[in-house]
Length: 298
Image 1: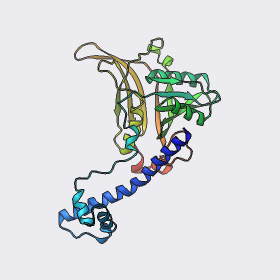
Image 2: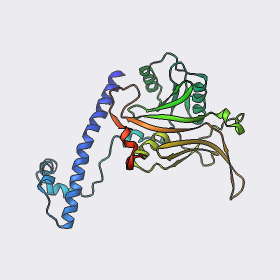
Image 3: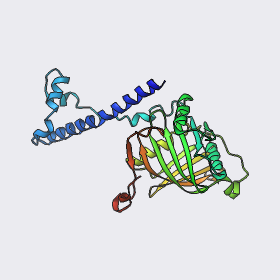
Image 4: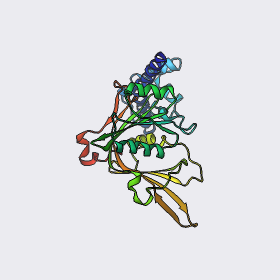
């Protein structure tokens, strides 16, 4: 089992190491095609290396022939794109746990997250190490692992790790309000329907990346589902709301907030699972990103 996982991880890292080279070649070919279409001379530095590649791949026809042969080529794919390739084909299985020695408020928050995410399972952290949590997720076919953390009894961080190869997203939590604090519906039961999802403001490439990681925590809903989860991004703070609705007429809908509610902000994305400390950092929030035009990342 460990050898197979190690081999899969090596193959995954190797594929990722080839991506930058493939994208570089693709961009150079696109520039050459654009220059040829405009009737401009092609600089020598753009064709260096492509001619040898063309001869090896197309029986000595040369780089120009190589450009003609793959003229309809689309942009090379990415292993990042394949992480959720089977999303929608089967329902995700999510494991939810807390940090060590959780307070009653953090335990309650983890229970409410389990109610929010269908097909999820909550376990008490106990003495489990991070490596044991990762092994448990793999042996039980879990697709994602959610770990919530706290500071002095206040939930302040959330870690979302996708299995088997990542990514792992780290969020800060703010303004956490539990279900029993939403006074209007503190005693109501929670629907277990697969929810509809609303994503607002995830416009950039990074926003799409974060949105996909959150989106594929949930299975595909039925058309008659009366439950909705909202993730709204404003200035890189993602507001989460949980509602049920009832259509009273052909023009009116009544909403009722169920809870919990909170704001979350991503600050790091790693290209591995939670226990893989050697995984590359794909993106991290730096202090200089909070100024000027770089202020909004999502």
